[in-house]
Amino acid sequence: MKWVALAVCLAACKERGTISIKLEVPPTCVGANNATQVRLQVVKGGTCASCTTCSCPCDNNRPTTECITNLDCQDQPWCSLGDAKRDGIEFDPPSPGSYALSYHFYDPDGVEIGLVCADVVVESDGTTSSMAMTTSACCS
Image (cartoon, rainbow, N blue to C red):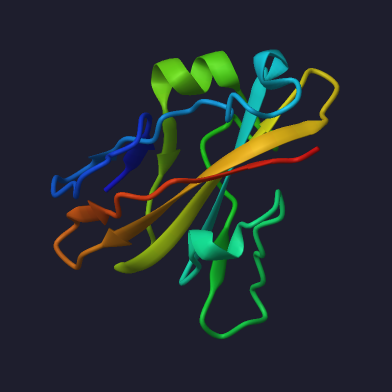
């Protein structure tokens, strides 16, 4: 099952295949209008509560978390923000569990501007639940 993440579910989602994340830089961030790239980092067993700054810990050495980086950005470290808004970013969860999906926004020079994060739970039958939570942070 592939997920395509697009705009934020503010209530619990319970459908197969798609979750929606609003790909918008927090408007309070310096350079918010200059964002042209987005990078999705997924941490299985992680939470958005750990994303209090533009750093969201991703540590495969911790037994309770798993970093997932092979996402559909055409083998680039980030996607064009325009393409991601139009097409989404595919993520195929390897197993049921909780995931923190953090979206990091960059300007054309590769400077990180801000991030948004959503906590998602994947059930064993492939359905998803998204908490009514998005954490946002500015990087400068």
